Length: 412
Image 1 (cartoon, one colour):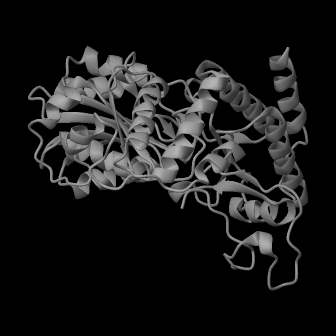
Image 2 (image 1 turned 90 degrees about the horizontal axis):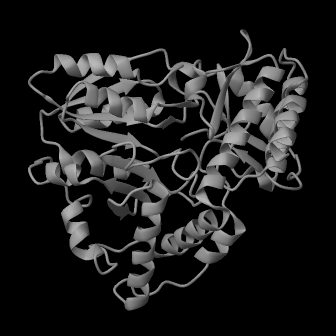
């Protein structure tokens, strides 16, 4: 579970309800600063609090068709978009199952926990998985991709699959450069990109960047609970689907397409989630997607300024790849990051993300995406700085001030 926090006493029951040791429930707002699921705006919650309607009726059909259109705007595409009742993993499985056949080659990247999970999925489908490794402090190397694909003169590699924003590390891959690397190699492979923690928060352009399949999820920049996932699909990917032979049923694009034209689905859709998605897309449109991206960029810069002000180090080692939706931070040698996070949760009612796999115990992660403003960010960074002090973690107490300077200058 991404970034979930456990209590010091091992009790995983709701920490708002008090506990067996007699501690009272905390007052005020719970700060959910994990990198997804993110906090859900009241507007979205209210929109979802409605009775179901006939999923084969005209009202639902019109709702669904409006969502297809507005999701195209969020993906920055004129390509077809599919909606699945699933977490982002479901849309990732759909991308693979619809376009590839057993034994096909696929180029993937061991650059973070979620990249590793996609590798595992591809292997379980019986694909011939080729991986490029790194130290988890940077994204896939476009030069290495070009070199690898130039060696594949028989074009056994049918797809290049990468994560745009690696949630476990706070590293954002350089997708336009990866597209250019594929083109420079003269290689016909599909480009498949996981946008789950970047869609609706970090600049992303499916069409302009030449992506063939974009994978999205509802629970991060789109400000919804988990439960919806998306594929934006190019004509090239649609062509590949015509000859792909991996088994599929639930994820079948053709089955979806046969119903989606009228706004309907081959199986029961997540009706209440559609209400929420409609409201979330309206909120993004009201703010303006360019403004949403700029807001996340400002918050990413301010958070990194805070990290530098604390004298700590981000996991991301290349400033070209800084994430604007999550910042992963190394704790000093000898400090247990998970113990620090538990202290912040219990003392200040704020949940931070933890380090995953090889970063376990070494890293805490600050999520700053979704329905989030400057004051909320300052509250979160104050909570981190207070936690560092209270837990005795060696640091400088300049982080909040440095973040405030960034936000104040940005405001002017």
